[in-house]
Amino acid sequence: MTWKTRPRSRIGELAAIVSGEGRQIVLLHGVGLRAEAWGAQIDELSRSMRVVAFDLPGHGESPQIGSAQLSDYCDMIAHAIEYPSIVVGHSFGAMIALHMAALHPEKVKGVAALNAIYRRSDKAAKAVLARAASLNGSDNPSPKPTLERWFGSEQGAVRDACEAWLASVDPKGYRDAYGVFARGDAPADTLLQQIACPALFLTGSEEPNSTPAMTKALASLVPRGKPVVIRGAAHMLPMTHPGEANDALHNMIDECR
Image 1: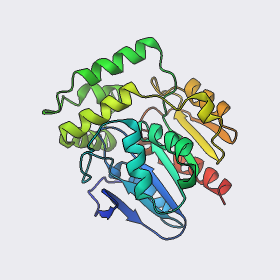
Image 2: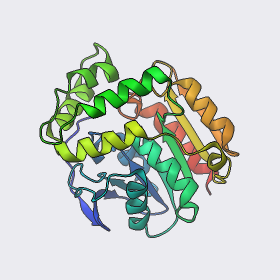
Image 3: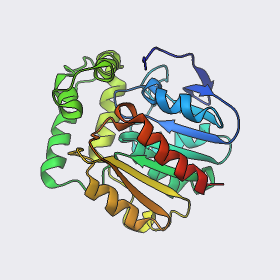
Image 4: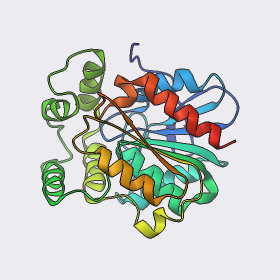
C-alpha cells in the first residue's frame, strides 16, 4: 500500500484520522511517526468500527504538549476520547495505552500493546537515554540510525515512509516524546495486575528492543492478557506485517463484545 497523507479531524486538542462507524477503536503511533503509520489498520478496521488514529502531541498536525510527562500524554488522549473505546498503541503509543488502561479504566474497554517495552536492561536503558539526550529540540537528527534499528538493511516503501516522517517531525515534539519514552516504562506490576479488560501484547520474533520476553512478561501480569509473537517481524510490524497484526487485533476485539 501507499502511505499518502490523509485528511484530519479535530478531536479535543488533537488531530486525528477518523474513518468508519460503529464501536470506537483508538490508535496511537510511536515517537517520530504520525497517524498514517496505521494505514493498513485504518483500512481494515474501519469496515466495521469507528477508527480514530491520533497524531500524538507534537506530531503530525497535533499541537505540542505544554508539559512533557507521560501522564500529560495519557490525560490529553483520555480527555479527547468521549466514550469507552478499545485503545491500541505501538511502541511509545503502547506505553501510553497501557497507562491509560491502568489509570483511566473508564475510557478503555480493551487494550493492545504492540512492541511495548517492559523493564529495559541497564544496557538498553543507557542507550535510549543517550539517544534522548542527544536531541536539541531545534534540529532533527539523521533518521539513518533509527531506520537501521527498525529495518536493518531491508529497503522498501515502509522504510521510505518512516524516513520521510522522521525527517519532517517537529523537532521539539520529537524531543519531548522521545524523552518521555526513554525515561518511561510499562506501569508498575501492581497496576498491570489491576487491568481488567481484554489485553493483547504483540511483538515480532526479530524485535531486539521490545522483545518477545517483554511481551510474554507483560501478558503474564494482566489477568486477561494474551501474548502474540509474529515470526519474522521486528519493530514496525503494524506496517510490515499488517495481515498478522490485523488478525491478532480482530481476535482481541472479539473478546471486547
